[in-house]
Length: 207
Image (cartoon, rainbow, N blue to C red; front, top):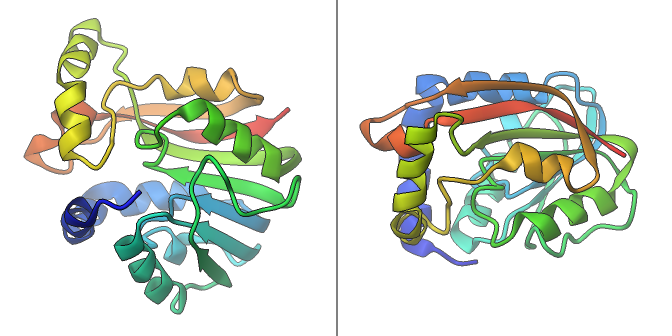
């Protein structure tokens, strides 16, 4: 789970990505959340500033050591209580049915396998708890999807395990959730964003 070179590149480029529109996406992602929240793959803590004051606590799980240190610093300036811990999506450090909501932000592209990660999220959420998601995904355009397939092996090796071609909406619905809202859009914050331009942003309910 340690990608020290990519983690440093990611943290330095993320400020420009936020200014290009990702910050607004995070506002949409987190609006209306309340209660106890678990954020999986919190990265450097870019989402922390966007949590509404109806959230009583955030448990931020981040496996990458460098990003986790940055997230811990960011937690001190968050508008809500945030606790940053080591952990990975396949083994969340949380009890069953202990959170009102879960947040994944550009994370399900990078977990080794979406199925165990989503099953863990399902485990720690209360019944009818919310999963909020903001992810880049496989394109609905067949030509673009074929390009994503062709480059995926190389992409995953240079981008810290990130995959360009995952059908994340299908994975969410196949693993104990019902999607209640979902918008699709292209987001190209820089010239190299073409393979990962298709994005989804929405919420799902734990069944």
